[in-house]
Picture 1: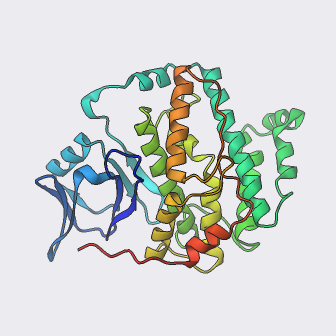
Picture 2: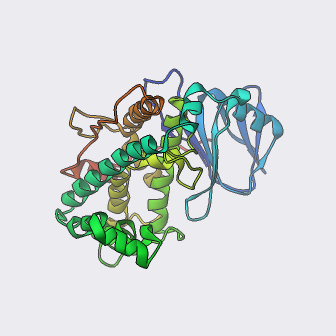
Picture 3: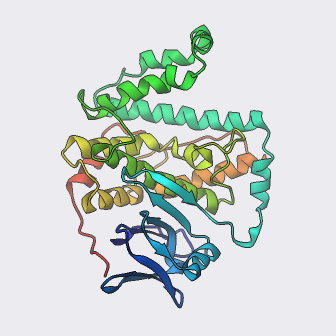
Length: 335
């Protein structure tokens, strides 16, 4: 069990901890204003509800109604993980049972405007992919794949196979992208644990940060810019510009022999989100950068701003990520 795998920076009005409860068979209750975890041996750990931003837990816990009520009233997100470290359930309550003005604007967003904003996010993701692969000595790796996005080739593939995502750039990346990052023998399979679980865990933490940033900006994390409640939602779209950086960190873990999610992996991912990365307008933390991105998107959704002009880290040297992984920092176990 671990309490506090990450904490937010000073820009927030209150601490924002990501709290993880790892072991099944425990019960979660409430004592005053504190969340309490209890096992067979008695109380294991506790944390003030007001300091929790997101609670990450495994199936097999029992919950008291008072604990769930307190988490809901505090607007705490709850994520249930599967054995492969992917989220099986992601909930984020809306205290007061009301939609904010920005959420109403998000729901009423004109589809062309939403697609325009989404294309900006995708273009930044693509630029980040190029930078990450260039940092790994694969500067021209995406050139041929990039051609899949243009002209008649895309239309012809759509006619031959309606599953454009699997037959186009994203589908081919699924086959080549991870072997390029990790090594020729690696195969990406999100359904598995082990090395794939390390990658899944990084993506899960990134999704948590994206959902939290969306909520801070007054947006609904589950409703996408293209106007759908699909599996990706706004949280998944906010992940796009930063995902290649997390991909690289996870790939470095796997390639250097850290092939399971242990405390060292958890700690390094937490530090990754707090560590300033070199950007075009100076250093920026992923966590703070995502909050700025969510706020810019909210202004775009409201129609009060032009399409986004993003200035995110363009990594030319992965040495900073290597240093994060190679320098373990002990995080004390709670309880």
